[in-house]
Image (tube, rainbow, N blue to C red):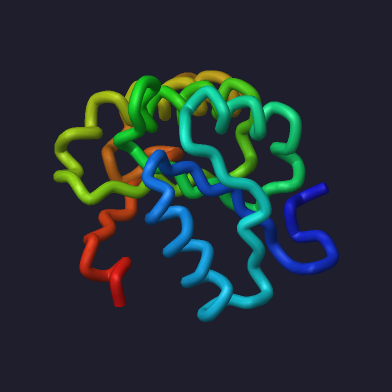
Length: 141
């Protein structure tokens, strides 16, 4: 299953801020009604449990980079160890510089595990967990 089953694409949303989860769920319902946020997690551990049992159902994972406890880049790395095909889009309201090194480590897992080619240097723009910088004012509109 690719995540694009009857009812449209399904998304796993990972954010430790319940207000953000509610806002993004509402935003998707209004703007992209064919897309469903079918699962949400408020911690990295919870996200990994959902992903491990349902990865083939998700068309996309929206992943907060600044989770409490296990941070987003580590969650991304562990998800890549389980599955190389599900797109993961990182979200943050912080500077993207904060995540350059951890995401490079996450991408090395994907390059090594998911490719028959030798690992090669990867630029920040090429990471398997691209980061979308969200601003709180966008969430409130």
